[in-house]
Amino acid sequence: MINNLLVYLRHQHVSSWNFTSSHQKTIQSAFPKMDISVCQNSKEFMDRLDQADATLVWHFKEEWLEKAPKLRLVATPAVGTDWVQLPKNLSGPKVWFASMHAAMMAECVVGAMFYFCKAFQFSKDMQKRKKWARLKVSAKLKSLRHARVTILGFGRIGKEVGRMLKPFACQITGVKRTPCEQPGYFTSGDRIVTVDRIEEVLPSTDHLVMALPGGHATDGMFKREYFRALPEHCHIYNVGRGNLYKESDLAEALKNGEIAGAYLDVFATEPLPETSPLWEMEDVLIQPHTSAAGPEYLDLYVEEFISRLKIEYG
Image (cartoon, rainbow, N blue to C red; front, top):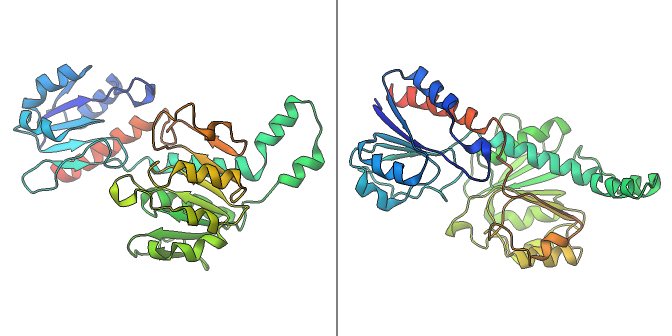
């Protein structure tokens, strides 16, 4: 049983990532006897940490454990281990990461695929010039139907991207470090391969989705020669982390026409420096690490948190 929940979920850039009184009421309704303390700043959080059984936070540092003798659970709506890095041992608190973000991120990937396939940016450019450029626009159109999609990082996010693409009869190749069971939506031609075989699948890829976590294990995993192995018509979509490749390698591949374009939501340095050549590239669609942003984000997470809390703590 969790008796004292300490909440510090404030985000200065994305309003929908801020914990509200409505979220507090939802949790309180599910657990009437729980004492819920909501902090508005880091000082409040640190001052109250010594009484908390559980925390609901964006960030948590290992050194804070010294101030949290009662802490049994650190829960976060964040994706991946970048924000909460605690040692994995039997004596430390459990760490829960969010799992509800996958659908929102998959929607962004599929939307970006249509952005490129249907030449929306070029059509907008022609609109600004008041040009009825039917010949030029139609020459750029492609179909997502039956496209060959390789998903590098076939975890929760990657699998959801694949699921959303199946109504378009896309052929899905999931790439993982270790083999796993195929999802139920797989059809003939879909497959899962281990990462050591990535060079085999790149030449037959129409769309490459990157959904890998950050960390040393993925640093520079996607090498310069991998860009060269992709077909010239291939588009890349990165909603994982920006450490996967050197951005200079990506920029060079785009400049040389080795790939057709890229949708980029994550970068090695964020915000992306104004000096980056990616800003000026015509076939690059940039978003500021917002593929998981949406007005329902924390609503969905609170539902997930309550459900899991009932299962594991009663």
